[in-house]
Image 1: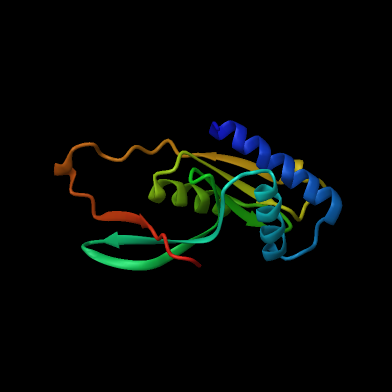
Image 2: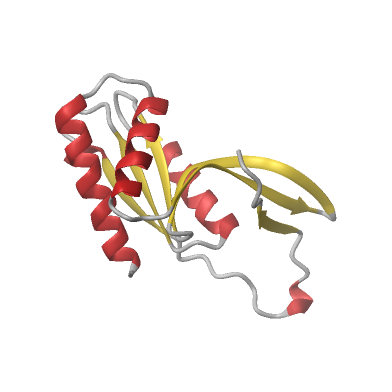
Length: 146
């Protein structure tokens, strides 16, 4: 399944959830319900995925957690805030860059409609190809349970 098809399934599920539950619940509620809905649609969903990073030769376990990772390629960051701001998009972009993932969705369930709360974030950052670039930061997806 292509990432655009996966994104379409996620957006469709978000709209259905928002219509039924409405705004005003905690992010954790939307996360649980969305994960369940996507699994019912046959998608692989991992919740609260811990991501390790290596920085300057030191390994840091679970440096951050991704709300949902769908089909091992689509990062979902769930919010329930009055209004999204630039720092929310930067957060998702940084996750994408560090995880070397192409696309993420920033999903805010607090709006009057779900349509106004969906932001697609694309990672256009390219990691250096030459090993001589000596990267100081390396990300390792933790395969352990959250």
